Image (cartoon, rainbow, N blue to C red; front, side, top):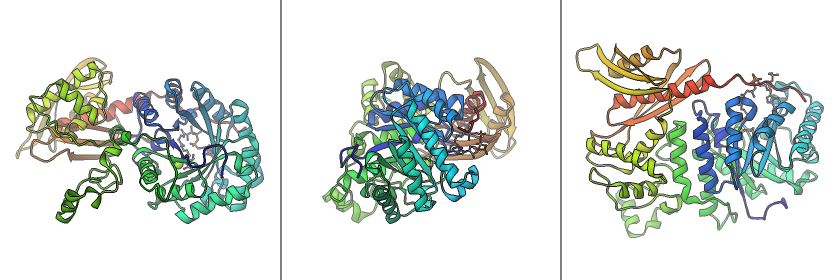
Length: 518
Ligand SMILES: CC(=O)SCCNC(=O)CCNC(=O)[C@H](O)C(C)(C)COP(=O)(O)OP(=O)(O)OC[C@H]1O[C@@H](n2cnc3c(N)ncnc32)[C@H](O)[C@@H]1OP(=O)(O)O
Ligand SMILES: CC(C)C(=O)C(=O)O
Ligand SMILES: [Mg+2]
């Protein structure tokens, strides 16, 4: 067991902004990253992996800005095993009160083929790059990518090399979600027992969910001696995602009797973070998702309802309020005022400044005029819409009118403000959404291909708001857009425009820099 942290304290390393953002389509804007980093810090995340600074100027600037605004959390950046990557990473994270450089290299046979390095050459590279990082700073994390598919003797050798070169945290990634709980535990135990210097570093676990075992594998690693879990909000991440922060944190809390470890997370902030990450990334949380799914605390069948009414513990192992779900008795509607809206929004996890409250209040009243009942989900959708359709966006939807019915072609009249100037056009299409999208394309010609168009009703009823999500691709760049409105076509156009605004930001990022060998 390592000696650097208290025996039972597990550090939470959140990588939503780095590994989470690597999910195709989950790209976040600079402002969104700053907002999420602030929320993660407030929630008590120990280490925030803010990005991959050499990946682009945009990534570098986001990591630097997050480092500058940070206070308690350690701000970490990722870098390959190359001096230029590491230098760039340090340039970004050094502004933080507490900074960390994370450097990695793929060590399994497949990855050694990719980098074309023999075992000896790889050991040399690790020694050189970790030493270089350690000469810049004293908090260095090193990861042997694809550790779980690496020969055990070689894994011990590279971990020993990294420790000798000055790494302070050794993170063991299950990069492709290949391991299983017993093996995950055995691997950490074996490294701690066999590698000289293992007691001087913190061991960390980084699991992917390809076989649905990321949470179990992370917890098994902790039981074997790992004291840092790498995870993301809602399990966002490459392919099937990373370990979900809310799952490991709540598992350690609920089953503290058999897993006597603690984290520094304020669990009452979980629901808010989950909603913000879902809205910003465009990845909706599945209804039956553990901890944060819409159905996690809902009971529909009679025996369950009867049991819960008699004793809530019959069918619930966590309290909704422990994750920030608050039972309330304020009914929101067209007669509600600002005080009720502020209180309700606070309960839902949104702290509004006076200006924001005024802005949201206007939108809330407009919605209440069109909708009989306003549910919590409507307010959450309203907040998400406020965040995704921002005043500084290049393209804004000004006016939309569609004509649809049994006789086509359907028609759309659309006015968009582009860079502050209004432009209007009439277009036709196969259905109102097609006509409206054609109008957008005429006003803002682009090559992006629509990969996904999805509509969800936020609540029940024919006056329900629709949340529309779109995913678009241009030259390998994938962006998502989201919007909600009681008018499905309006929500569709706003979601489309939201995606285009993100694409404009992506295009503006300059070309990535290339890495040299050390
Ligand atoms: C498991 C993970 O999550 S790993 C992190 C994955 N995340 C990302 O890749 C997102 C950010 N990446 C990027 O923006 C780009 O890939 C960049 C800027 C890092 C590199 O771009 P490019 O120079 O165009 O290289 P490209 O992406 O095509 O290929 C990756 C190169 O890095 C090398 N490489 C990969 N991992 C490492 C490593 N850990 N250390 C050193 N070199 C590495 C590859 O061998 C390849 O080298 P080559 O160009 O000599 O063949
Ligand atoms: C960069 C490393 C830690 C990673 O994300 C992985 O191996 O999955
Ligand atoms: Mg990963």
